[in-house]
Image (cartoon, rainbow, N blue to C red; front, side, top):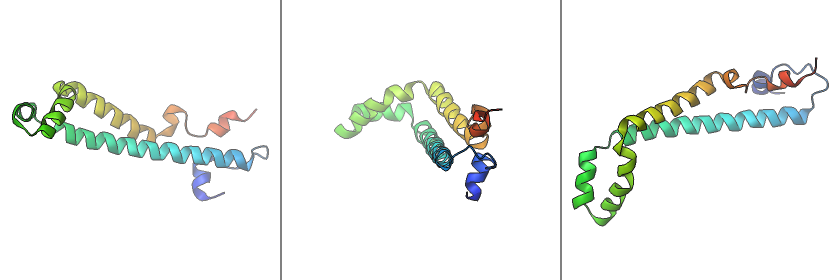
Length: 119
């Protein structure tokens, strides 16, 4: 068992635990971690990108831009219209993703194998 697997799964003192279960849990933790990193990065990027858009500028593009700019402005306008709701949603998603990455036991991801042991 590698050092990273020991850190994620705990000590391997239980003889009833199979190597297949350890590999599955390790793969599951890695997949969840990668998903959370991507989600946090996506939310940070969307926060920066969407909050930098100005509604007045989008209205101008919607009325006098090229056909492609008009189509994009029309699509993005409902999302940008309520900037406070957008900001709160993006920040909550980003905070949730980073909190779970920092403290996986807060949602029951850490040491699930120890909880499954009888006794």
